[in-house]
Image (cartoon, rainbow, N blue to C red; front, side, top):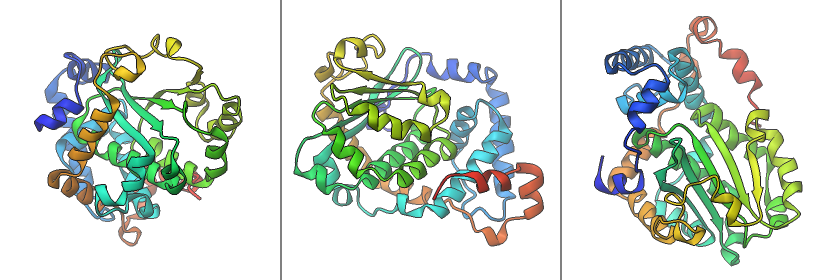
Length: 312
């Protein structure tokens, strides 16, 4: 792992051992065999446009699906299919130029350290400036999906916890700008495609309008995830949930400033190596003309699943 990635995607000393054991792979040989099985299955999928997935990518996919190879097959097929259906979420050519207004309007970053439970905390902090109005919500979704793709290759966490700072945000404006159909598409991608396990959504705000926003957003998710939304009027209750060593100094923590972390992420994702990886990953889609219908129904049982995905 490159040094800059190690600085931004830090693990606990026992993260790898803990998560592998949690999902039945205490024996590394057993994990390698599972990766071999998934890799062999991919190479037999005529409808996949990409068949050379890195082993770390496949390992992360298996662990995200709690060690189930069959669920991993299903999720990988869903992700490739959703990329084909919702390709506009993956369209960008240059990180710095395509997201220039986004960077001025907000901070969206994974924090470097994991929690004690091996969760990766994602910080979203909006700036109350003219660029917020110029930035489509699609850019938020696109950039979060860039992180999902990157972390599949470099992280070893047991889920994500979202910290949303709306202190300087007009929540009513967020409600008015939110396209619920597009938000559903994004949530389908992140949970059904990437298999992200959302361990908590913690929102900092004193706005009474937040309950109206949550009444719109929470039904998009499962009841389990909806129950994990919490609103904090101050940092006091937040620090009871997220350790101080994870939080940036602006939030009463001991981690470096979120501004410094943001700059480092932009630098890392803009690098030639990262851009080549991200562009190659978005080519992993499907060509339905080559899908074997019998295998599709018998082995994966995905036909009904795709019919019920709320993507439009």
